[in-house]
Amino acid sequence: MNAFFNLSLDERLKKLALKAKELALSAKVNPAKRRAKQQALAKLISALQSSGKLVKPQLGQFQGFYEEIYAEALQRLFVHICKKIETYNPEKGEVLQWANFLLKRQFFIEASREFFPVLPKGVDPKSIKRLTLDDLDRENPTSVNPRQVPLLSQEVIQCLEEDPEGIFKSTYIKNYPAANFQSIAILRLSRYSWSEISQKLGPAIPTLSSFYQRCVTKFAPKIKEYLS
Image (cartoon, rainbow, N blue to C red):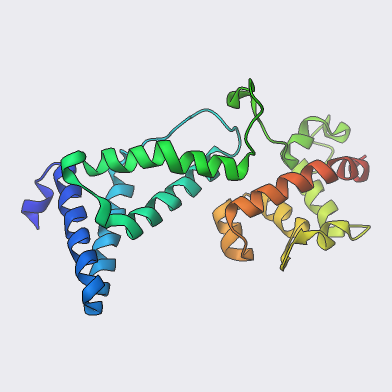
């Protein structure tokens, strides 16, 4: 074990990847090897996650949603590695080169398109910033003197909870009644991550994000009206 950790990062990752590849190929003909394959893949993914060497493509773009997009891209990368570990060829490069190429050239692009449709020609991604309920803070006329009113997030949460016309709760993701705008917005304002909301309510992160954005755009005027 000590000899393993004395190896360079690239050597450790290669050793883990080749072991996982070997077990993946063996598991195709011997189902008893599946558990060992899963354990080997888990070690490889853990080593990649803790390496601190995975690239962060287009850092500084997609304000307010970068971390969610990146988390989705990483998830896609790790799933791909687990399913396609047999395709790893050490003669074509190190494990990190392979993983970073896929992350940058394929999975980050795919994930960003889940959150943002393809941008019109000539639009700079750096200029894109999606509207959130927090943006109401800068436009809310009652927040001039914060000592005299509750924090805006608390006011918005109260507004969402009261839902005078029942429109926030009745607007939900198809087949997921619990994943309604009321619940999602309250969780976001309470600083839950998209991953936590996905685990709690069910739908995938891109579905939640897209639905939330559409609803914020739709309901922002109504929320401002309630707050005025």
